[in-house]
Image (cartoon, rainbow, N blue to C red; front, side, top):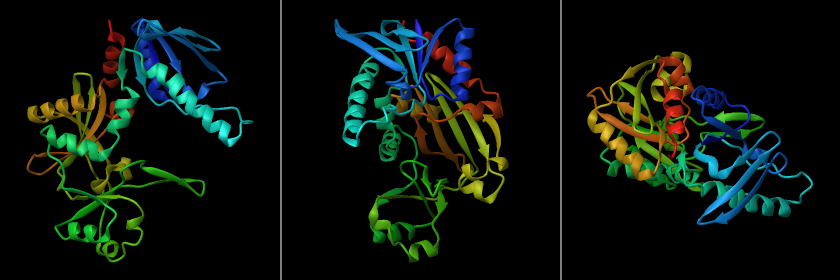
Length: 317
């Protein structure tokens, strides 16, 4: 069997996974979709209800029938010839997406995670509604582009705002990150621009600490994240140097809710964030289908790479 890793060229977690699988004497083929079409080609034929054929690179020919698991890590967009016109580029990209992408997506193997399931799960409103139906507690939330709705919601109590999609933008040659932040009176006094697009507002949840729960197949690893500064208390991503970590237990009821959520979203892997209140209640914030885990492993020694490697090595038998 072969584990196919779809990842960008420079990815330490993918490097570590290749080593972990080779230590288990599992054949690994690592591909970046950005290699297509200059360094990657595909030849596939529909036979008996599935696609058979090959992926071919300069160094490897992969038989699609030998693939038993796919780790959809972080592949990059197809890099098409520079001489194409804008119309030709769009056409070629769409054909590659539905051609090569479609052949890969049809592979009847273990996916961590299947790109279609990951794309569906990326919708924060879907996550929150599914988490609530799964028995997890979620914050009071409103999504709106109406200033009056924002003010009415904020009148109920302390409120935060956070991004629904990408957490950063590139502007003026710089990467700018949008962190979760508290809404203050100055914000409410000037809501110009709210009407341009949707915004997410949530009731502030009192924190004892936050928890990152990493789900790998049937295994769940919970790590408490303690904030050591005012900014990291609101959003721990603002000040990594102020954080401390410790492995913690996941309450049975929360674990059951997480399992229902993962099953409902069709996810095999997920990085879930919770707030734990002073009363010990676990409040679900989000699940990232492609969330990073290397820093958690480095800080706590949790064997997340080994867990993933075992899952991929097992694949579909």
